[in-house]
Image (cartoon, rainbow, N blue to C red; front, side, top):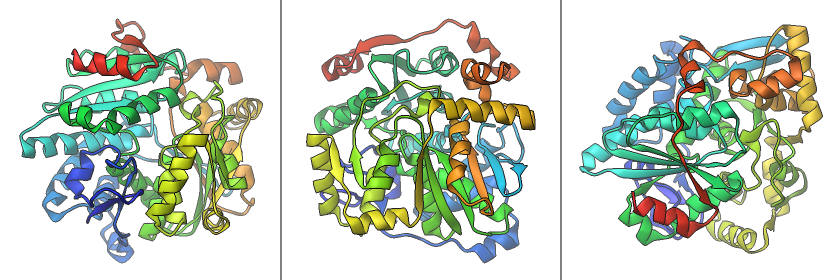
Amino acid sequence: MKFVSTRGQSPAISFEDVLLSGPAPDGGLYMPESWPTLDFARLSGNKPNYADLAATVVKHFADRDWFDAIDRHSQDVYARFDDPRVAPIRELSPHRWLLELFHGPTLAFKDFALQLLAPLMDEALARRGTRALVVAATSGDTGAAAVAALAGRANIDLVVLHPKGRISDVQRRQMTTATASNVRNVAIEGTFDDAQSLVKQLFADQAFARTHRLAAINSINWVRIAAQAAYYLATSLAFDRRPLTFSVPTGNFGDVFAGYVGKQLGIPIKRLIVATNANDILARAITSGTYARGAVHATLSPAMDIQVASNFERLLYEANGRDAATVRTLMETFAAKGALTIAPSALAAIQSLFIADCVRENETVATMKRVARDLDLLIDPHTAVGLTATRTAAEADDVVTLATAHPAKFPEAVELATGRKPELPERLRPILTAPERYETLPNDIQALKAHIAHQ
């Protein structure tokens, strides 16, 4: 399998290269050269566990010399999740379910990909006899999952940027209380979009990226997207492959794009609901065809406080018939003007699968309160956004909402809505009192480069 850039001006690369890559040198994102297809007859007959399914999906994009490593690491990492089912499904009412994606080490869906990506990256670097510096921007959950996955790795150093004061205390402490010497945390005086822009600028400086051997673990890394597609497959098989609609709390568009990947692999997905909070760039784009940056609003669901959704470029590439020249023009327009217009044919292709809904703060609170009252169940605000957005589907449609984080990651928001404060699992409680370790930097690329260069 080879991988090509959405902007068409970088050479195709291998699975091992894409495993260690950030954006393509031309600024685009890597995509598989063609779409493989899953063998559902074999999958159904073998009755695979979750680790088997995850390995199966990732191997469809990998070279054969990586198959044994993918199998080995999949069995290892998913055995460490708190629930033996890994991604259990909870019925809420007729035709409505929650897919619980918070049973990993850091209580968020990011663990599903990063726990697998980390050992694969470490092994790739060992094969090459080198090491890498992973630089990641986080709106909260990616950073914590990256720290948990990469701390102590033999061949990887990690720098995580988070927007100062714009994530929950639990999210921050999951990162900043880490003691591993290969992990550094930086609070950026700005928004997540600012932090993400800084990371993109680092990679765009190819000399700097080569000198410091930069690698990425944000959802721009293709292997993360592939790994996340596995829980769409697991859910589909649990429902005997009847067509499902998935409602996905959405910020950077990686998680819901993993659903698109699943659809291309042959999973019978009926619709994908793109559930946003007040930072509704994606809802506006999918509804109107205008993708326009706005001001970032702080909300109860901070992991979605994003106005530039990196992975949307991948969907534009697909919707425009994989025409890299068109995507390049669109992204140049967006960089210059902060807005782009999706062609009618491309928009129709997007709307054939995706529905979008913007959920306001009062609606998020109301959903959390209703679920606590009627079902005696606490959900986090991101999951509440996704659950609220199921209103866009017909009552008779089978809809699975991705429960992307444990409510204890956002105790203040949950208590505000329900009057009940969720408790952290016992194994994580030490972070509440452990000393923190991080630096604060301005939203300035030179300051960040200097920080990296002098460590």
